[in-house]
Image 1 (cartoon, rainbow, N blue to C red):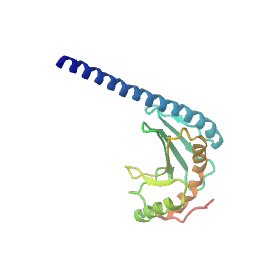
Image 2 (tube, rainbow, N blue to C red):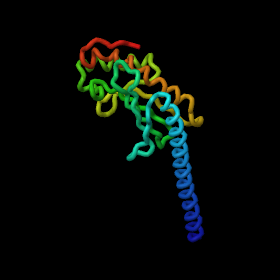
Image 3 (tube, helix red, strand yellow):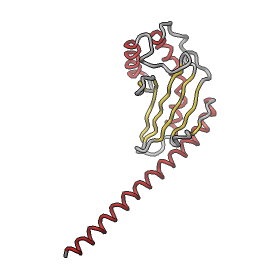
Amino acid sequence: MKRTFAVVLFILSTLSVSAVYGQQDDEAAARIRTREQLAALLEKTGAEMNVGFKQGQKQPFRYVGSLGAGLVNAESFEILINVTASDTIAFRIYPHYNKGYINVDKVKDRTGLMKSLLQLNDHTFLFWGADEGGDIFTGYTFTLESGFPQEAIRIVLLSIANSDKFVGEMRPFIDGTSAGKVK
């Protein structure tokens, strides 16, 4: 009786382990498919934006690009796009201003900048935040529950340049200069 129970327990544990590994394989394959779909979209839309997206060497589920054309206030926008293991695509877009990132710990008016970011979150398409190091970014996160959102990703990509005017609105808090020309 004990032996039969042990055999049944072994079989059940073997089946559950293989189901877990099978699920992990499916998740990995889905993430790779998403990355491939994103790569194709970035190649096409990046050309429209004059941005060459490159796959990360150390992080193969990350794409990096830089938008500089047509900006008035920011020098450029560093675009990081991650295909996560949790079925999302996360955009983090860092404005470069005065030869670097905008960092909340290095600006003239930290409180004013943070208040500005909170207010921007109320009326802009992309959200604003600060990463663990205090660098300011704008971003968007897609869930992939309903499949690959090709047109929505394209709209986010084409909307990045619109964030330049908000960098102009932040200038008084960053360096004390008046806002630049707003497009």
